[in-house]
Image 1 (cartoon, rainbow, N blue to C red):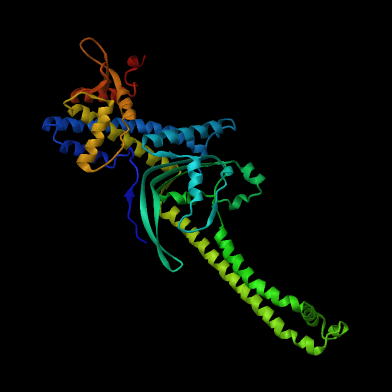
Image 2: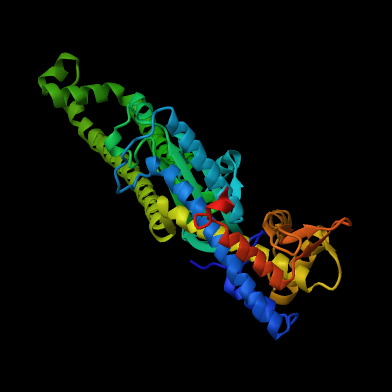
Length: 447
């Protein structure tokens, strides 16, 4: 199998690590040595602040997810009530979606999922997912591209364009035990725990193979497999029927001869010579029947082999393409969201800091996207709205000669252009916010 990947659409994801992005900004040579050092320090304290805030979000998610974690090792001191469980499940789904949006993942709708199921994958089998088994189904992806895949089918080499999703995040909330009991499903053979929430993070999943990620996927013959079994059988059976019809009486005599002995045939007027001529007919009949049975068995074996290939593909996907599952997904996605938010803030701050011309939001967005493409060949659709709002929310009352004054890392001028605090003031602002994250050491300030 050979593959050649190509980019399909622009996304907000920034394809560099945060530390590399800082170096790329400094390599632009818009900051002198002293300003470059201050910029590093600003990025360091900004990253520490985002890490602290991400930790608080993670703890909230873990607390709400705990009652639904199928891999939990600890025992709850107090289980949520029947009224609280739906609220907690809704909170997990909402926070999960918000976290993925911060990490620049895109949602896949129910309609997009069902459309993906209708397209035949590399293994042509009919698959079915019963969405009624779920209370909640969420699919998100980040990164999309195409592969040209080569394979052999019917002794010929063929190629197919495969739409790959580079990262896929999944939330599946199963219905409770009563639902599966009512459907007469054996709980021991389900492969999952009813009522729990399963979280998965995968890499490089073909869009047409998303059904592989459902624990309740069912496999059956498609119309082509059924025709391969039915049509040859009918084709062989028709000549046999035409041949047997004129000698139906002889066939009845043959059956009587085999089951009740030679004497019974004489009662119906058949001579022994006539009955003896039935043996070649029976031999031919048995031969054709054996041939049909052998052909049917061969076709069914091919179907079983195809089904085993599908199941192996499922196993390979779950084993080699699964990055992390359940509570581990929360850690991975929180880190990804923290990284993306920090990189976006660095880009906005850097370009506003170094621009010689006033920039409004639209021109700033265009400047960042052009800089990424012209300097590093990285085409992105930068999420300017989210980032500007995040930086405007970084504000505090900083001390001054006239007393505490409200300051924000980013502000909007009356002419709608944007400005950021100088490096020294920006570091002081983030440091002030960091120092006042808790007020335990200064009760008077808390009051």
